[in-house]
Image (cartoon, rainbow, N blue to C red; front, side, top):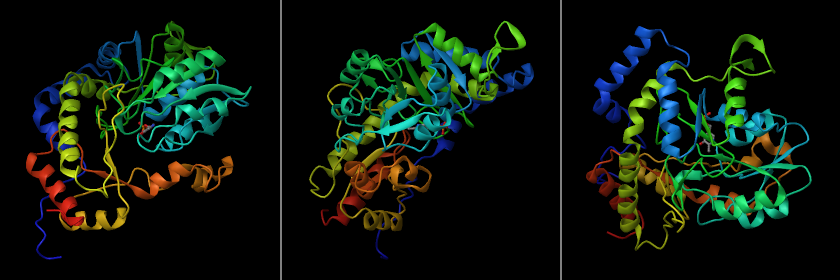
Amino acid sequence: MTDVPWVNVPMNDLRIQYTALKDQIDTALARVIENCAFIQGPAVQAFEAAFARYCGVAHCVGVSNGTDALKLALAALDVGPGDEVITAPHTFGATVEAILQVGAKPVFVDIEPTHFTFDVGQVEAQITPHTRVLLPVHIYGQMVDMEPLTDLARKHGLRVVEDAAQAHGASYRGRRAGAMGDVGCFSFYPGKNLGAYGDAGGVVTDDADIAARVRALANHGQDPAAKFLYREVGYNHRMDGFQGAVLGVKLPFLEDWNAARRRVAACYDRGFAALEAVTCPAVAGYGEHVYHLYVVRVPDRDALAAELKEAGVQTAVQYPNPLHCTPAYAGLGYGRGTLPECERACAEILSLPMFPDLTTNQVEHVIDRVRAHYGCS
Ligand SMILES: Cc1ncc(COP(=O)(O)O)c(C=O)c1O
């Protein structure tokens, strides 16, 4: 393949964002050092207040990462051994890991193939007397159909914990991800729509008691008013000052970055519209997608990925292995064939480059190469 034009199109490029915000970020980081406010501190507090406002909730607790956010949310709701948590199999392993780490049992509901989120219509059939929590995952940047889900939770007396790790700023009928459940959990892993410069996460809620419990649990279960007075066994899951500082600088730009992601997605959608082989991500009518990832379905995923690589286009597969079929989670009792839509998706999905700073030239190159692959120029 010698005559394929080569344009470098990475999946993401964090350096561009840093270059644009360098002065503000360097200043904010220097302030943390000058104050020696390395763990929590004023930068974290300021970010917590700003992110709670952004999500439209009363409280945000900055924590160590998205996995710990989920763990803390479940622990704060007293979820533990003997309890079941209904969630999606098509997610990053952390979702299921967190459920297992508090001692509860994950129960899977297969995905709905056009949006990749779990099929809310199948949730009720999985509810048992042991079910405590419904844990929707807003996968790829689009929210789960939350109204029927929260109705179900109310009907059965269950709590809702949102895994919003991929959905900063996504909305459902005007309400932001994280604000519709009892608790919302975010990851600020560097590559996320809102990313820190290390591991970080956040727990958002309108419930003051849940927020206080999460805050205490994240700080070794200590009484907030009395250091070294341990009210319960907790964790060390605090956010550090550098992460709060970086996130505080970046948050005001999130809306623009999400809008830029939507513009890239719209270009891809238009560019692939005539290709029968390519199924573009579907946007549900109830809200705004923030395209953490732009994931297409194609019949020959590996061949397309290989050809794009030849042309300088990086791609990824999120996720190639159905979670329930991986060694760590095989013991949950879901063999191959039990969650067919998830398994089918894992074989067909391909994530194309998606970040706010992609240039028109880069986006057009991706579109041209995909179209050429399918014989359409
Ligand atoms: C859906 C989902 N849940 C949870 C997590 C865990 O977040 P973290 O990596 O910050 O622990 C991630 C991170 O990629 C995620 O994508």
